[in-house]
Length: 123
Image (cartoon, helix red, strand yellow):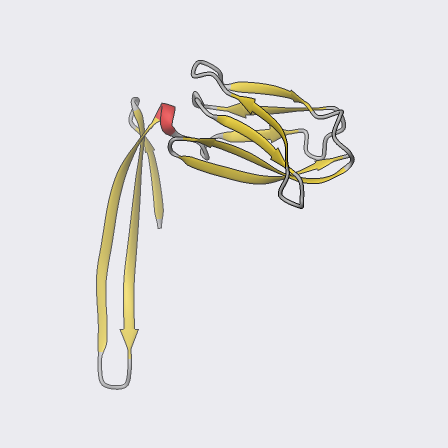
């Protein structure tokens, strides 16, 4: 179970897991709970939207949070074909992909908090 709550200064993320082992002789259940506060300028994967996809000439990356990080487009053979940098006060980035050959790519958005990878189709 995952619970999100916006408390004004960031998001609270709470996970709850239940471990269950069972055999004919015994049963065991122990809850494991972890709570983590995510600050808005550290969020990379929440509220991130790439459009259009598939795309012909340009893509727009929008985020509901400020992203201070990098955008990479990687070919299917692992070659980085394009790199851009988000400034800390930006919530969107328009990227010209018209110079890329048509095909399937991986779009990586990353910052200190982590990386989000999504498939990008260039038509």
